[in-house]
Image (tube, rainbow over all chains, first blue to last red; front, side):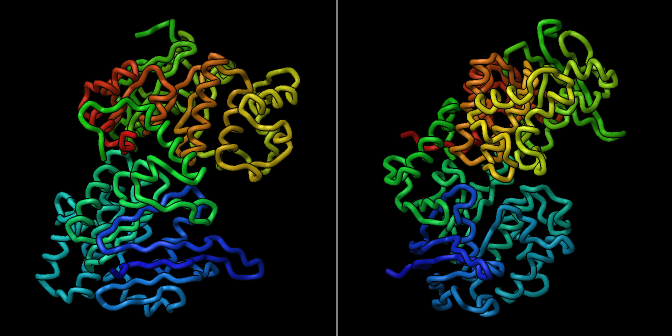
Length: 276
Length: 255
């Protein structure tokens, strides 16, 4: 069985006069269709790990070790590969959604135009077919009135709508792996629920793999098959979600689970099944 | 409504920025001395505007804010100082709410100076640091020496300095990591229990409201759609919006 994503001793360091290692050796592999969650608090290195997998670390951050992605278009080693050579992986093999949708959206281009770009490039669509594909993509992420959204600039739509557009953009080239870095952290809780439902459905229907990064254990518990726990730049535990919740091995994981459990218990159990 | 028994109340308060749609419409709520009220709502519901009115930072366009039975007049400096001794704010972001160039002890004593409260400020600072679980030598250090959770403790110590009767807290734990969040909630619970301090807690987070507040109100699009004892609102929400809010909270699977 070959993994879609294989991280071996993946590290991130700052180069320069005072070099320092920020992420020390992450080891995990992700099979096709699998959903892996990375949990950690601020400064744990979880987002740097995601950026390293995408080959998007900003200078002077540099990745070490190995991050291999084996997509339909062949295997590629991300670490050390020049950015322009990663372009054939990004979008088609790996798509990404970030906490702040504005980070992946262009404020000066209408939503429809932004979405048309990857659809044209990766699916070779033109003219009417392209126009229809843009509207379909917006409808698929459950945006009501796709025509209006397509004509809008991003400052004209809400935060939840922007995140849906960002998801549509990440899915446009039909990637095999979706990396979602705190995609709902900036959103209201009702909007978050809608986005999580949408991600669940897209991942299931497309048979995609998911790498979901969050500081919020209940959010991860609802979406991930396995959980990797990070703290201070180190991977400290990896296991099936149910097992991490029921029998955490590392003391830090245990403390995180206990705190999340206690917070959760402040809320009475909803009468109409309060699951994700 | 609750008239003279409440410490702080909003009575049929409305507020509009200029001639735009009102941000708040006929909002009434009251906090009795030593009691705790949670105000829940999502972005744009009007939480922050209501908090500004209750803090005397702006005046309502209609209705009134009532402090100890009297209308709060924000142009009366003397009344406002008396109000600020009794009602102190705690904000969401402990990074921006502390002056980075001021030693922590000086920040904590700031309300004592500005409200012209006499006494041994240094001794009071030591007492406050202890109350929030920080060492006495924290007073000489600067905010950048502290973590987010510690800074929020410092912000709470500062709010407690003038011995207020009510803390108006705007998302006091939202910016904190899970385990730190738990500790700050415990600190607030202890303060309520030991010092009889009341809370008006504004949050989008039902969990913290459930942990700290006996009463809660739900604000949607500038109106209070539901109000009552927290337990009964959360176990049997009467308004569909409250039910939707509750159903949206991600929960851990039962152990």
